Length: 163
Figure (tube, rainbow, N blue to C red):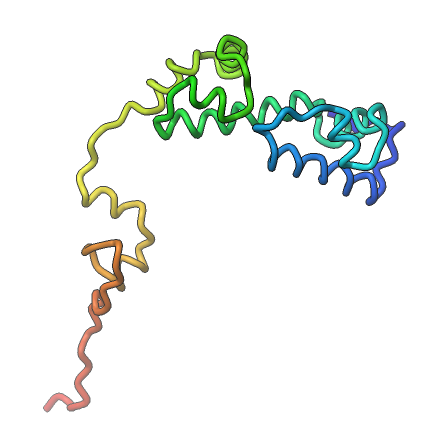
């Protein structure tokens, strides 16, 4: 998306846009308003809206909604209920959360959760495939919760000359 040339993208303005983005990430569960975010950035609401859209390619509201949906996906994947997730990420209506989630992901929250949480038991040895090889060489395939020195096999070297 091309950046609006009418917006001066100075360091100061970019810092202000980043400050507003950081506010969204820190307070996504709160009722953030355009006026409040513009005040945090130290800009008028109209200039802030244009600046944020030029820098991030989305309005502050769309960006906030995207953050909330991403956090909701993580909560649902961890096993939280849809209602609990809806309220935790800052939505006040389960119906609006569910329809918005479905528009953004293509699935209802419950269907998305079922698809993501479908698990297959994995034997313990397969889990070691996701551990760096250098760690396995040093610590062995034992208990991954505690370091176990001596897993590395060092060949013995003889100083005697063959006769």
